[in-house]
Length: 203
Image (cartoon, rainbow, N blue to C red; front, top):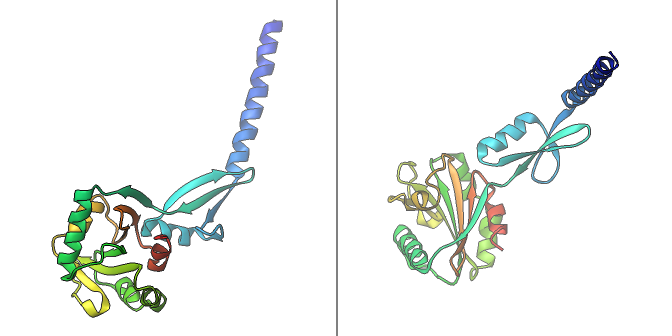
């Protein structure tokens, strides 16, 4: 009988602790945090996820904070791969490139407002003009994007879809970016990033 009462007592304690614990979890507030650590609305947070950013939850005592972080990947091309990539850039832009510069390629799956924004992004293009020996940058649409080449505005079309097939074969995002350094190391940005931020990430 004593053993039965003892077991019943422990069962009641376990149920109380479990209920209390689950109650605390259920009462936790869900918050959303941007790249700079600022709280934002759920709607704004979800718009970033659609643009290609990733999400990671962190559980605190009273809240569960969902943080955004960048969807990036770093790697290094072999010498033959590096040569092939730079040869394809020259084919697409129809001119010789400076292999001693870092190359930025911004890729677009469609002809839309984002492309127009990037074409007219004064801070971005002014920085490049002031640093002509450091970076070459190209806005490149895929072959089905409907983009019309305009070399004066750095706009080209990859009729081979080489860059999507080489670097972004599995992505369904409309915008992606590649930073290629002279030594063949590269960084990929999956999604709709501010191209000035991609430029900052090149250093």
